[in-house]
Image 1: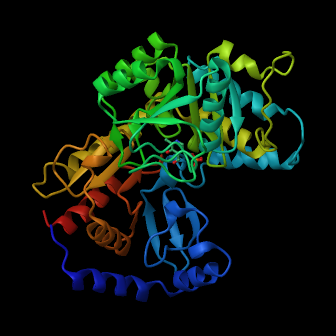
Image 2: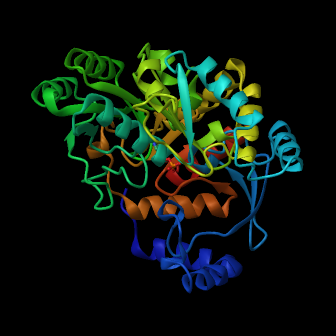
Image 3: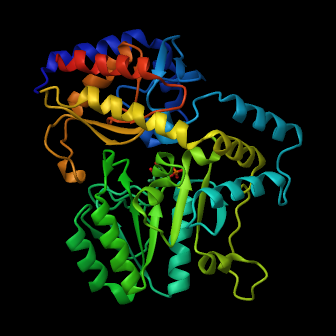
Length: 418
Ligand SMILES: Cc1ncc(COP(=O)(O)O)c(C=O)c1O
């Protein structure tokens, strides 16, 4: 599908014309933030929309346009923008004061819920982001094994300091990473064996989110887990995104039993959040009463609003609700695949990736580089009131229903003219 240059120019011109206030705010921001941005993920040329309000699965921008939210804050917005149980929990916690500087009752409630949902998590610790949770899990792995290296996979995104998309980010910390191809069990097993004596951990996503919402083959994950076990290498499952796909996360679906698991996103109820947890003998190294205790501070690790919101959210996130949302994701893929167009929807459950190819996508290398088509589709969808991530990222939220799924799919199909 080729893009005529004037088609893109026209679409951008219409976008600029329709969004003067978002443009003005972007220009204003540029004076104090690089490129007007403090989170690269949410930048989109020529400028991103400034969103001023959200309610349920609806968003409004600074120029008064309304959108149905199919981005779901890159999976953190699972509950939508104003879930009554979460709003009530935040209000209640707020009334009892912020920055208490001590253990509080909300951290206990959330820790109990996390440990109950994820049987591999005997003990959990909280942090402020998924990035931090992953860094802490890897730090713990290096400390307990006494080994320096970590195995990661091409295309992985474990946070802003752990990015391995088309090469490693220069911002990554100086950990000696070994990088192997995703979804290739033979090479993963070989690399684990080759580096066994130096590898502290392997970290992997059961669905690579940022790379294009690419599910791992269960055999790849199981082979990796088995090889890691045999070599005394800790198996760390990054469930920052995928924990939304089942009550017990993808580990429960695939029977993975990781040594350590990391969380973030919706588990904090929509507030800043990260967590890592796992086997008791590993996590107990943080017990402050031990003479060899590892130090792990963090001013906001048990910040009351996040703890309260997270616990209230998990309490309403039943297996049935998750199944309904995953069903909506399947419905969307069903409506978008097999159309005959050079297009496909990937993913699993409520996580969906949109790509301009019909060929199988099993790693970041299979994702076609089609920035113009991605921009055109995104602008087409925004014009019709559908919001999602320009790179083709869709994460469904609880307030959505079949009507919205069908409307979104119809608007994509209109673009594809199928
Ligand atoms: C799989 C995965 N791990 C870790 C992170 C980092 O989480 P945070 O943005 O909270 O640092 C992300 C964020 O998108 C993610 O998708």
